[in-house]
Image 1: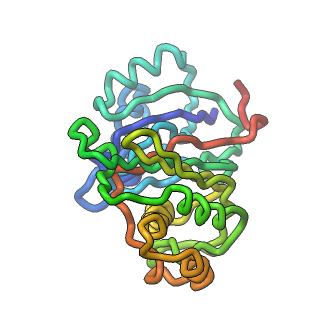
Image 2: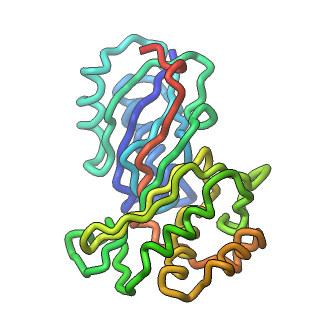
Length: 248
């Protein structure tokens, strides 16, 4: 049977979802714990790959498990095996041919910025002290909506067939000393959200004009867009699937 496990994690101690040479990823830690508990070698496949240092409040991975188990018992047992910065939230049975990655219809990310130095947010939000025009940044963010070629916001060395994404939401909110950028799309390119945030901040500080922003998108040139903001301010907060894929 195929199952979807819902997972959350603090990305500080990991090189992202997938392990790299001499560096551990979240996937390997979970595979090891799950295989030990169920006493069989298991391979898990995530709904996507987060970069090093990126946090996650909702991610899913698929795994095929033949033996019967009680989800209500497995979740606390698995969480007791996992380190404190990784947690399993739920388990759901899905149809046998469903893919956690390819059947996701939407993903939502949030980027957190604190404009006041706050030691309690160290590693959880980026301290950006410059004053920004949130209204202007939202006007620019609105230009991202719809389906476009976003090669200008993608890492240069990435193995994809195309750079098209359909952005359904892109919005800034100011809450006291905090700035929050939320973006939803059907797919994201590598480094896309962090590059978009960096470019929009350039608009908010007046470094980049609205006309220049439009030219950046049309250029498909990563060098023309803003710098990537730090990974530790980024959170994957939601992955959406069509209801019909779930059995229970």
